[in-house]
Amino acid sequence: MNRNEDLYVAESEKSVTQFVADFAEIVKKNAFVVNNSDTMDMKKTFREHGGTVPDEFDLHMMQVCKPTKADKSLTANPERSILMPKFVMVFSKDGKTQVRYLSYSAADIAALVLDDPKFPESLAQTFAKIRSMIDEAR
Image (cartoon, rainbow, N blue to C red):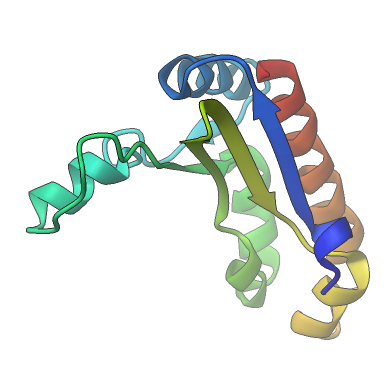
């Protein structure tokens, strides 16, 4: 894994709430979904389960999926599922909205899901699309 290549770091002038809403709309427009809309606000989720976080804690963990691609991919090889949860992290830091997204290189994908030569390229396309949707929402 290479931090400089695999960790996508972005910043937005928008509030966390606005970025999350805008990103969700862009995701939808591109036939992706946010699977965890009800639980992505980690302050709310932690508190509902007895966790204690300060009021200013505003981390949103957005699980992004393209069901019309994932269905075929996982049907073809369930071993791929280890790399399927794709989370975009959105939070504020130093007065700005921060976005983080972890993806993997084709070599990393091939090392994790063996004997599946088509998967690294296909997943790399999805990773790139998610990065472009983040940029569009910024």
